[in-house]
Image (cartoon, rainbow, N blue to C red):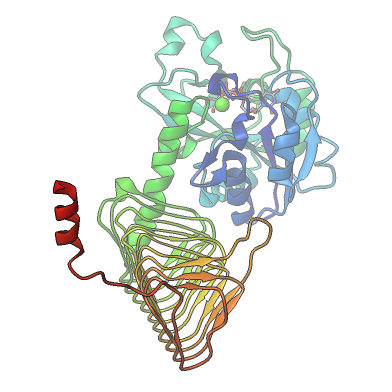
Length: 457
Ligand code: UD1
Ligand code: CA
């Protein structure tokens, strides 16, 4: 699109009461300012400038793919735009201005603002919203013909103006030449002693330049995050927007209110998501899976036909027809091959569980490679750490590991081997052999009777 974008993200965000800059706070794993940058990119705008200031060391890494301008002192939104003038030089004639704390803005709306500005040769198009509680927002003033003639900040409103429900969203598209000319005339004569960008609208109106107010049909889209309460509200809106999209695409979500799916997650049709489930980061889930209840997948790729019940999976790969949980914990580097299982209270780290292999109950498998059709008995553990180093365990195809086996790594158990329950295995076991590493059972006949006699003497 032939427009450039300017994102304002220099403010302190004091109302968050945080040691972290406001725009770095996250919704569904994504920082507020990142939602805005991504929407701008999706709208097809290539030239993007971000104004940073307060705690910029933490903000700059979040907007690295934009051109960064530093506002040393936060003297107001008009000042923030003014100092970006050089960064925007040579760019197209339309400049979309957005606030970095409004994560719900949609790419289509950004396009609409720019289209309207360009088609009408407007000095400014402002996105406005009708809200029940306009507290804190700038109010839109319209003349007798209904044209936008000014914006008055909440703190500068007369009693009469406070009753106005139409508010400034903080999203605009300006004609570039007009904008920078008008900014020279903005003063700090207002309740907050700041340079208000919103003053540019009255300047345009007075100069007889066209000013357009575009009323949004979704006020949620303009929700600005100034407090923790608004952070939660914006989070709930984005949660719903994302869940709705997945449901439209054929995913069943039993309880959307307790299902949190990140913006970059993909889920194929006929997968069912049960309550209290989180899918975040670069997670991908195939079709015909049941995920949840009470599951969390982060940066995990899942194939088709899997059941993941009460499962936490981090940076893992889960192929097709895999069953996990209840209460499985797959840590980074886990690869569950087709038809494999990680059952109840099972923890797996950096290991491959081969095709159709099962780790059904109460086990820890770390730094291990299992072949196909391996069975790990309940309560078995790879002792992969000697206090200094991690060591590998290799288990061949069709090996049968008896319950409560300790596999002291590094160790290799050959194909088709059998390990007796309760063994501590410290040496390799060759293919097809029985490995036993436990004390032999002994029996003392009549022991109880002899003991009773002795006690009564
Ligand atoms: C602003 C608008 C208000 C609108 C509201 C919508 C002004 C004067 N007011 O008010 O009309 O209803 O947004 O959410 O513009 N910032 C800077 N540098 C500064 C000051 C602010 O970069 O010197 C950034 C902030 O980080 C923030 C954005 O600009 O991302 C808006 O500033 P904020 O202080 O939140 O303005 P509001 O009071 O919300
Ligand atoms: Ca704000």
